[in-house]
Image (cartoon, rainbow, N blue to C red; front, side, top):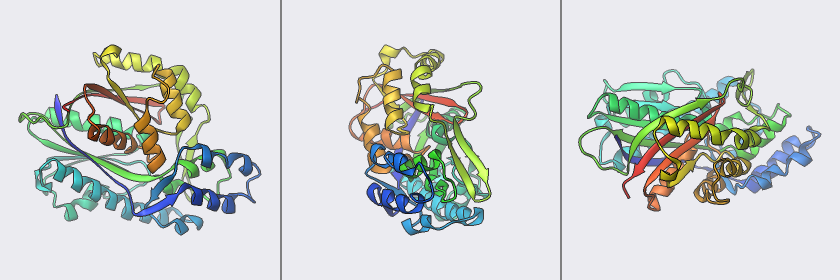
Length: 349
């Protein structure tokens, strides 16, 4: 097993009250999108009170091209990386030079050199630190990335691995796209980062032990979730079938993964889920035969931070650990592919 030594989160400074986002969306889309009045209900039904963005709210009311969006991503995502990583390292009782490998997950922008390289001088990582940047996992990235960090730690016993998931989802909000998916993204997306430090060997007890991870990808589902690449930047792909697809398919896929992970359903004390939206949370509860309303921390994170893609499930895990999470848990997230990611851990509370 791999010890999870710390979990830390960070959000940018700019606060977006949902009521103000709804007001501005009405100004920008109301007279240009015929179906906006009906779609505007999503701002109230999204279960969100506030979110955070890497840029001031006025910035999003102006059209931006790829270079401008990339500049905002590079600056904002690097700052979030540093904030979350620094806290995770300190919470683990370590310093940046103690890190042997960095796994970075981000799918909301493109940066070469990658984010951990940009943060290296500020963070004081060693010159020989190994870097593993991962792109394209979307909302599943928090679970898959943590599983990858654990596998790398297991492959080199005694080494310390830093995992950081950082997303600037708000950069995908587009004034030029008159689509349902763009309106939903405007109502849901927030920015944030989460970081974990893991180590195999050395006898650390940590917060929990990471046991195993697995993924399930459904065939012929590439169009359910992802990005389109357009002149002005990424365009969101959200299929309206996501909640019913989860209801119909998630249970069987999770049963398959748990069998691969040698876990019996009766042994799981808590499923820790990525809260993609209120309908997705309800679909997960239905598909997994969970008590309605039991994913309470998921709803709280969604309400207070919005859907931040990959880091969001780790915001949920951080809060559950602080509240005294015990026993065996399974982290889950759905992402582009269309993919279900799962990771099991046993808490040391």
